[in-house]
Image 1 (spheres, rainbow, N blue to C red):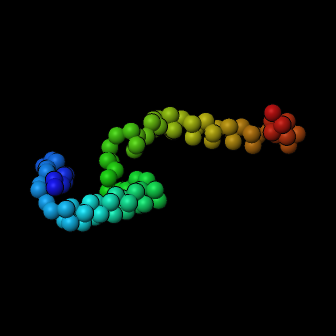
Image 2: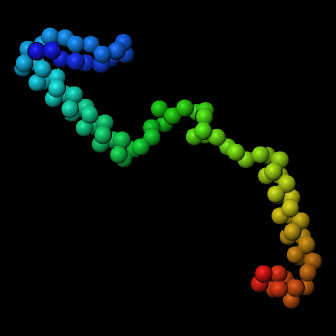
Image 3: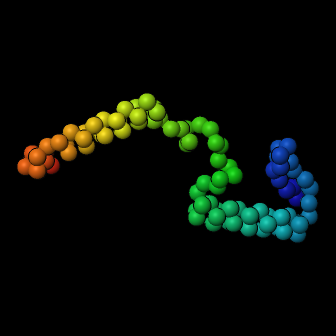
Length: 93
């Protein structure tokens, strides 16, 4: 009986007895079930992650972030100059 196994060099087939084939097939099934069980709970392992590419991509431009922070700071200063009634009006907008 032929048993097919896969390793780093590729797929290979070897001739084994039926009893040994049953043992190897059972071990393969156990390994697949274990991998399936763990992948449901942990969909992405940190070891398999590439620390480059789209998953870690940060689209934020540092200049845009700085400009936005400055605009917010200026807005808070401008709001603090307004009277209480004017501040309430702005909040209602």
